[in-house]
Length: 62
Image 1 (tube, rainbow, N blue to C red):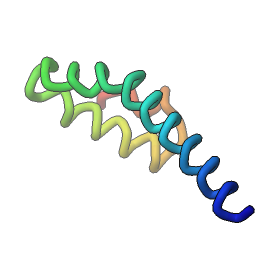
Image 2: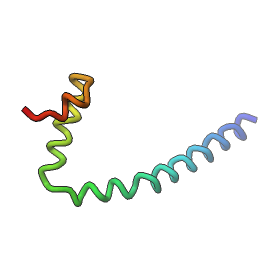
Image 3: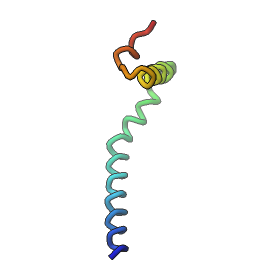
C-alpha cells in the first residue's frame, strides 16, 4: 500500500519536472543572448523589489 502511494507520488513528480523543464528550458537559453550588462541591472531591480516590496519603485533609476 505505502509502496504504491510512493510510486504514484514519484510518477507525478517526474511528470511535473519534465513539464517545467520543457516549459522554462527555452527561457533559460535566452538569458545568454541578453546584453552582458543586462543581468546586473535585472539583479539590482530584483534586490530593490525584495527590499521595498514595490516593483514600480525598483524600476526607477536614480
